[in-house]
Image (cartoon, rainbow, N blue to C red; front, side, top):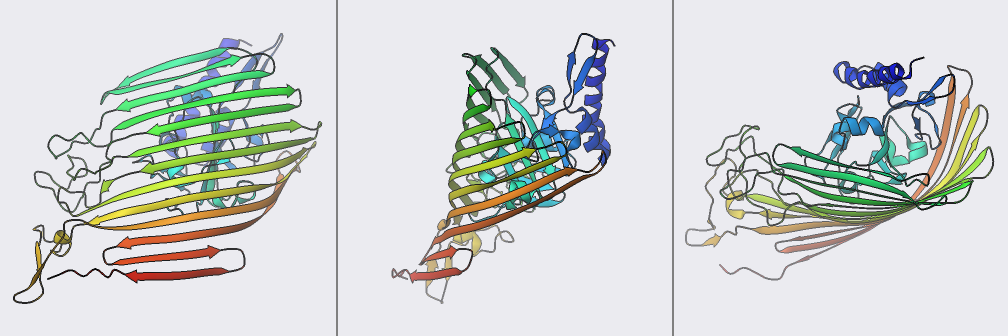
Length: 505
C-alpha cells in the first residue's frame, strides 16, 4: 500500500469529520470523530498500522471507539492545525457543548442544554473541568489558555461515578504535553492578526537522560479592543492581554514507575469588557448591540492570576494491576470592574473579586483483565474560596426612577421646608467565605460482554463538610452570618447591628 496515499486519506477523513458535523449536528459526529480524531500511521516492513487516539475518560487508557460514553476528543494535531486555543473554539466543533467567554473570569458552560454559570464561592458546579486530572471546576479558574496540549476530552451526560458529583451534566478533561526522556525537540509559532493581534507560542523538550526529562512551554498574546467607546479618550472595549507559562518534569526511576510534576502560571490583564444597554441609549449612541458602546470607566480593569502545581505518579504493579496518585494545588486571584447599567449615565457599577485556594489528593487502583476492567479508590478535596462583589449605587439616579427618568435627583424632599441631599455613590458589599472539605470513595466496573455490548456500572460515596461565612456591609446596616454545613446538621446564626450614626437634616 502506498504510504503517502494513506496519510492523505487519513488527513482528509479527519478534516471532514470535524467540518461536516458542525453543519448538520447529528449523532453521527461523535462516531466519525472517534474514528478519525487522531490516527498514528506507522510503516512496518510489509504493512502499515493505524492506531486510534487513546483516551482516559474512564480513568484508564482505552481506544476511543471502545468507550461506552458520548465522548468527543481532539488530538494535538487537530488543535494545532485548527488553532483551537480556547474552549470557546472547541465548543464550536462539539455538538451539545456551548462555551461563552466574554471575560476570562466569568465563563458560561452549557452541555446538552444545562448551564453551569454560577461563580460564587458556595456554588456547586454541575460541569467539571479537569486539567491533567486535577479538578479546576470553579468558574473563575476553569478557563485557561490552551497551548502545547496533548488532547482534550468532552464527556456528555452524568459522569458522577468517576469524576465526582460536580460532573452531573458532563466533564471536560484537558491533558497537556508532558516531558519526554527520549529526545530533544521544540517549536516556536508567531501569529499576527487584525486589531493589532500579536501572539507567540513555543515549547521545548530536553531529555536529560533516560530517567529525566524537562519540557518548557509558554504563550503570550495581546490584542486591541474591537468595540468602539463613546467615552472620549478611552480605549476600545474587549481587548486581550495574556501571559502563560508551564514547566513539566518527568522522572522514570524504574521501568514500572512514572512521575510527572507540572507547574503552570497564567496572568490575564485585560481591559474593560463591554456591557452595553440595549434599552437605554447613551448620549451620542444607540441601543444596537453592534455599534459603539458607552459606559463609565471602571476604577479597576479585568485582572486574573492563577498558579497550579500538579504531581502525577503511576505505578504498574504487574501486568493486571496499577496504582495512580494525583496531587494538585491551585491558587487564583481575580477582580473585574464593570458598568452594570451599560450607559454613560453614572447609575450603577460593580466590582466582583475572588481569592481561591484548592488542594486535592486522589489514589486510584486499576485492574485490567481480558474482558474486565475494575477501578476503585478514594479522593480528598479542600476548597478555600472568598468571593465578593462591591455594588455602587447612585442615589440620585435610583430615586429619580432610572432608566425611565434620565435626569438625576440631587435632593429628596421630606417636607415642605426640609430636603435630604442624595449621594452619588453608596457602596454595599457582600462577601462569601467558603471552607469545604470533601471525601469520597468510588468504584467502577467495565465488562465487555460481546463485540457490540459493554456493561458499565459504578458507585461513588461522598461526604462533605463546609463552613460558609456571609458578610455584608451597607449604609446604616452591617450584618454577619455564620453557616456550618455537615452531613448531619445545619446550624446558622445571624447577627446584625444598626449603625448609630445619624444624618443631620
